[in-house]
Length: 397
Image (cartoon, rainbow, N blue to C red):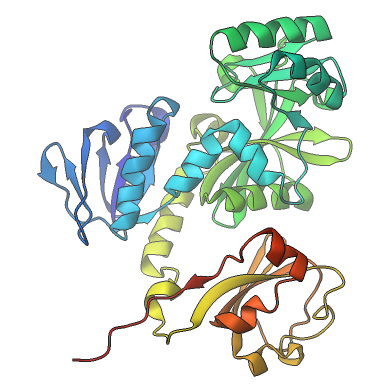
């Protein structure tokens, strides 16, 4: 595998470990400074230059995009995507996870535990927002803070109002989050690669500090996560579009609560605590994806006009609940089920005898008109169905 690690810090622990792990496995790898790229756009031929020269072909890239260069960094990753180079984390996933508000907005559409969070910009809306999350104490977060910077615990409503007003005066956007008292000074970092948690640690703050980040003097210990925490971590990473992620969770009385999803998680702390070769696991995962890439049905299927791909949800009360795919009547409508999504589980090419359950999502290929008719009337009135027509090949000659 020919791999490029996009990093501005070749000497930092995480980048060095990834380089060592790739080289020890016989892969050809280079560390490329993300800001040394130039992006060329031309009809049909997206291209990239590095230090003024056309970049050579790579099988995969591993982005390590810092918060200060998110915009340009995601543009570079997006250009690699346009050139059909496999990327460990998508440009969209990096951008979504970097913005705390956007991350929480996306996760809130799914059944994933999270601390109650609010976002208000108008001064008159701040006090009601604090009340809605349960009142003081509250956590105040800058939208793009990292390593605990820009995270403040306000013990009273007056202090919270003063902090928010000060931050707003400096053009800073902030989130107000419920303080989960049972997790004070403690959180969990789950390291996700692909569809599993490969390592986890619990971080504990020291003294009066409530932020548990190791960079702020917190201590860490290796832990085994139960299934509910693993499911929450993997599902959060997948929803964000990240194959490699560090998911931070609180241990609340009512189960795991996701705080953040990190697209460039550090390796030093978690490798030291768990004594696991996490860098090697990342490289092995990338190599496996390059050897056996996911099939892009938009490129591999030859279709006729009027056919396309869409996702169909099976809500509670649907006529399909309790029926097998074979008995659902989909095939009679010229609709084929390509993939079944059930919670955080992905089932490609599901068996026809598999019974459908409430909450299932089906990625289907078939007649667009048939699939449109399956969308409930109320939903169709609210928004247009997300149906994507596949390109129709030109006739021969």
